Length: 445
Image 1 (cartoon, rainbow, N blue to C red):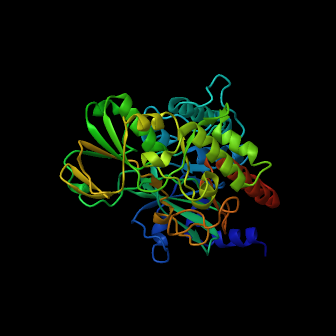
Image 2 (cartoon, rainbow, N blue to C red):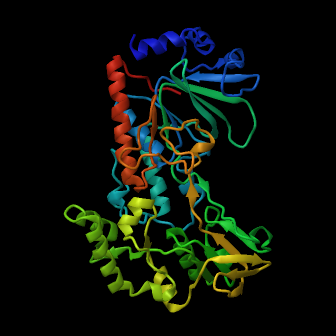
Image 3 (tube, rainbow, N blue to C red):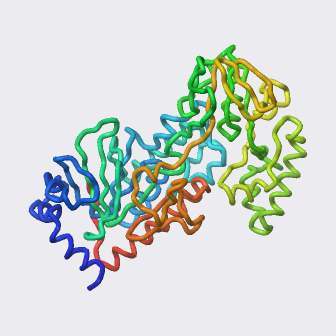
């Protein structure tokens, strides 16, 4: 018996599909069916559960990755259902980024599949322009996510050969709604949850403490001494924003960091790197980039910004750590407007003691400590995703597909270019399965 026939046979004996078969309209909920299976079900359910059968893939997350794979599927005539915990698409961009943010890479490297940026957009589109592009993208492909649906559990049902995805209305403990499908695409990304560092005394700090996900503008910190913890692209740009609003920023640099000019020799640093990699090995390109960076910026180590032993591209490939593309922060560090500080030893009241023994008082602390995946908290899978960091176990380009119809998109550590590659692969793979079956799913829900 082929897998499809086996799956159909097993569904016929499941209460969900017995109830479902009585409903000719596939959009209608199948109510009270979960209760009948509550003894056997792996997932704990409330006394009342609404279930939906989804003929196409279920996509978790309506960020750029979720939109990209939904569009690629739509182009092939395959409908999908996107579950989004927030009330909008691209919630990280819309709700959890600072006002002055713009794309750090040229727009041509950040396009989603099947639709370029508008021709009149600048090389580095602003946050507002990028969000407008995403909204136009969703409209063009008729993508309508189900908002305010937080996935609390997803698990493959070995009996039905299907994925069961359990959700609740975001911010509540209300009725559980379950969606059932043969495919599950994880598009929650590498930046689903803010990382909160464990710093001795931070909880007792009497001033303002916020993660960059809550930071909007330096206007609220004019005249204040602000300590920014973290020296990635966000930390550096927040410091620049604070400077521009007459605050006194200090930045904690705990680890070695690569700082590169955003543009070199009249071209974007990223674009120049991609061009050189067509002919030269990574270690040679790294040496060229560092030589040009030193000629433009000087010796960054003199200002407390030591470079890692590995080159910027090699380090990105090995650890996913992105080099800082400078947009003006380094000049403020050289002028002394931004002070560089070593790692924090402890905090006592408003005073911060650093690893070099210095003690400084601050009015506010901004945590530019990054984000992490939240996949291990809701997905029961130990094959495709690592339980340690919530990222695919296999590195790009081999981390997009798991077993039993499980896929990942947006976890490549290669930005939107990696997202586009994976989205196309996933859509093609699912299309081949539908062609083998001889039908395509309708667009619904």
